[in-house]
Length: 382
Ligand code: GLY
Image (cartoon, rainbow, N blue to C red; front, side, top):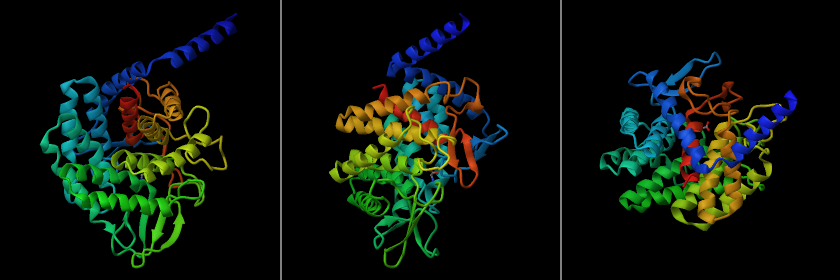
């Protein structure tokens, strides 16, 4: 009798989770984010950004130089947009202003992530011109890293390096260039972004559309020297977040340029990902880890993919992309992945993997998982 009651309760919970509308899911998660993020903010000093949790559960903070410094301000802007509550605008503005020191930073390509999620959301949501200067400065820093011989933007290091290193993650930084090109009507940034995307399309992908993480080029000749991984399981494996960046990157390139070559690439990547995702839509941290299914899932890759799939659906009308995003979002919004109120120092999502080979950020919350999940929900609930 007790067993039957438990079964009925589980069935009822399953039914509710399948019938909850996208609007209700979005409202539920945004409501949670609004209280969680106030808690997270209360633990930060005036120049600090949240990063993750340590293995002992304590909050790990960082300065603005860390590649993720734009995601918390970006998430706060999305909460402000959803709620209309001025308290979150003030918070978002405060965390965005912390990034001003990045204006002249040119040590890596991450300026795209940092400025795009923070300032460009601020500009889109408020329309205030004061948010334009940083994207313009950031796009200049990023385009300074472009090498015409290689046809790409350097991800890491500088001219003193023996090779020119480009990671697939760099596709994400191109949105900053394309947005600035739209704002100031100059074609130069657009040309750099298109060239980088085409070079990456040529050299980063295997015939099945899985992506290498890192391609090293000869700086002088532009020839490919080596293809390998840094954060994946092996050089030839399909690292889940790298594939998520690739899917999002080419979807974004098509959204911004309407060049059909980028749509074809995005759809080829999408087909591979959909074929290989587990039933609940959350990828293992690397699709080719030999320990699958006894290894970690990566909720950050799922969140990035879900936003890309929703965008791809909006661009093509293909329902299979919507169904994939729907599956991922419903799993991420379940107790398995979503923090309970007051849990995890104010992060939203659990079970992400930053860098497993580096034994860093394994099975923890990460700011970019929260950001892309909220971005996906914003589009999903429309
Ligand atoms: N470098 C970005 C990432 O870890 O995905």
